[in-house]
Length: 411
Image (tube, rainbow, N blue to C red; front, side, top):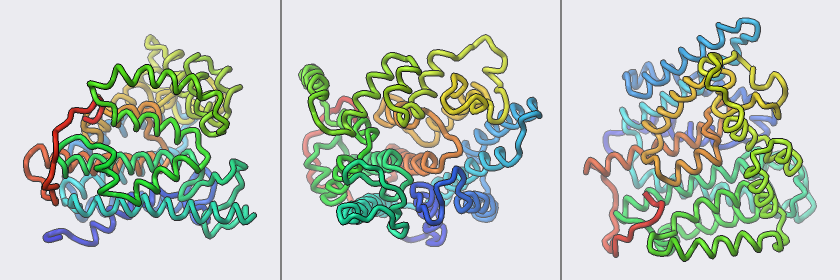
């Protein structure tokens, strides 16, 4: 790729892979991955040396950091600088990645498509290796990232710490691949288009989502399936969805049942019901429920935060745990976070990306590496979408574009 620094290109790819993968022998199952922390701390040096430009990401991150520091220092009794440094290191990592993509332009479209395909296949191949090991009676083999037995048939975690994380990373990778093919075809896609362009990544993606033993995977697939609902068929699909929803209780498949039960529990907006239904799902659903039901907009500290670890001061399942670090750093910091996501990563508010951001990621960028890995993927896709809108995108276009069908949620 002419004019591109290959070392910076490899470093940008390295960041995506590092933050989308949890290789347990290196990262461990502990809450903090020191390897990822060291990588994040190295990023400001890359930023200063290779892309020291003040971008919109830079300005938003500075504002967010000021809110975090203000909330933390206003509550010195809980202030822990290690937590602050860890949090802000990820934001600086993202800034470095953003500038490499937008300022140094280290990716081209066809190169990024090849990367997405390869990454999906890598997740697929490792999952199959783990599943073969499980069938053979092997429940612990760290070299293939198999360090715990989930007791979900052949369900396994692939390149993440648990299947639900793998599901979220994979659905973002696949949606990113679909968005890139949209740019190539210059229209919304049919399933046959995707299958023709990426046969094995598509097979691998569906295999992973259906067999890894994750309820989150079925929620993600449900959202992704909306891509193929065209406007003229929307009213036909609604009765079909109701019928499908009605027969789920009679389907003897544990991951699907878990997703179904967790969804029903969420609709109650009752945290006790959610906890009794599925403790694992509760950890992901309760922050959103608490934000909907317990956010007090008349409280000054709601806007400016209660300080470090306030949300966890009463435990993981307390009413203080809210999305986006609102309890710790305040609603204003959360608003800045959303502005960054929608000006740097997600191109369109009314999109599948928004549904994933709300229901799969809880609108949150915390100290959780895979969230940042997925954000970087969205950012790269947005970069190519903006190039296409400006008419400067260079990629191999499809000669037979077909009918420009309009899709219900494809844009």
